[in-house]
Image: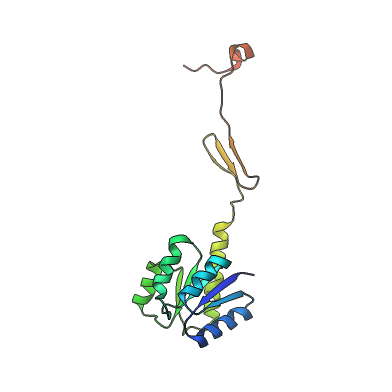
Length: 166
């Protein structure tokens, strides 16, 4: 069950968003300010953050920048500030998505699922071996192989079978 941190200074919005996500079977941690959000991130490492752009003790954009300095936890801004300029600035600061609080609950849930699925896919090891020149990386078996050809010495008695290098 993915762990989502919901950060919102508005108590009613924090409660409603958290309830919606709990009903969708997510594990929820709530924070009503930047300090509480940073404490949760340090202690519980959520899988995703739903963040309001305006917080009581800090600007949500600043909090997003601070998180991005040390973490790649996905961040979705969920805000009443939803003009194009607001959305663009949130994405510039490192958010993975920016959505208006006036959207339908199904849209918020769909965006959360999409971001979590993208993160999961990017963290999965590729299933096929990757080769480049003499090197082969096999993530499934956790092996890195180097197939180098070495010339046999004359005492191996193989020189007559080797192609000449002219």
